[in-house]
Image 1 (spheres, rainbow, N blue to C red):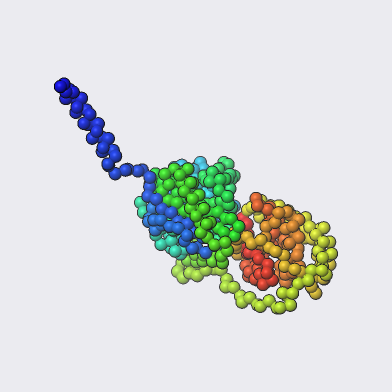
Image 2 (spheres, rainbow, N blue to C red):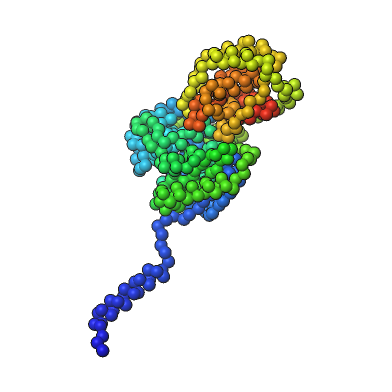
Length: 480
């Protein structure tokens, strides 16, 4: 009996050992740790969670907080959409993804917001932070204060863009909470997160999550994130009818795997969420989240070194600047009675003078002639109209100041129908809607019927009175 040469035997033994080692050794993966959260956006109820409180790298999900603070600063008058921001060397030197900003360049804040929200540009995010707080460190401090005020207990921010940095961590739960605040605290800016493309001043930018937005019914936002340490992250939101779901994924292995998983989580959320629910809006952070209790003056466009002139003060207001609501009077019983026969002819006559306008989301209110309603008003002094069945629009929730508030009374299939409803509602609620601008705004799903030009208290009172008659409406903020 002949035997194989020793070298052949040893080679066969070596190969067997290698194969066995591959199968028996622990599987190594370069994917980041996985975490997920599914939330009913209307109530904040958690519908599913996995590793939701594990601190992980958020990557560009960070920019949700950067943008939130920017919206907050605009609301509080610290900066405007048209502020010319001077780009610092720090912002210009950020690695991709980036808009391509140059040190010393001036660009309006509105373009930086679009670049950060749509393209997830790191240079734009840093420029926003420096413009608002004077330096990256000061802005990170404000980010952390705002996060704490929101209840994001396991989040620590170190920068405005989300690139990996020691200690810069968050969780699936905290990012879901942040996403919900963006939706409800700043609905007038939320459309930024669903724009497939946007004009960023120096370039046209494309959305980093357009594939999922195009593929999922009702998907309308909000933010992607990727670094090697984080994996493929996504906070997404979708609305179907009166239901809105927020789903968050950390640690996806690829864009396609992340999108597939977020789709599964969204479907789970819509299956588990009730068809109707009372909306419990989150409480916006109070004014004491401002930068180190400093007032920035004389330089809203910091120079290249990011230095801003500041005055430190003690005793800065530490409560919300939003005024308290006044008691709402009870609606008299006679206002609940309706009769339209007496004014039908007058309504039709007034409709002939109406010239509706469709406006792009985010456009400033444009003045236009009001239809003549003198004759109708005389009739309405002795009669009110039937409440019109109104479609409830969950996303129209207000957060602005001054007389830049309004109410949304539904979305309709045509301009004519929206104008008809606006006029009937105006006649039914002349005491609170008198002097408002009736605006029809064209959206992808139809035509929104809005009354604009109210104070916060006026918008709240108008909605309460309409709701007492069975008409559903929601307050909305000014669209910027």
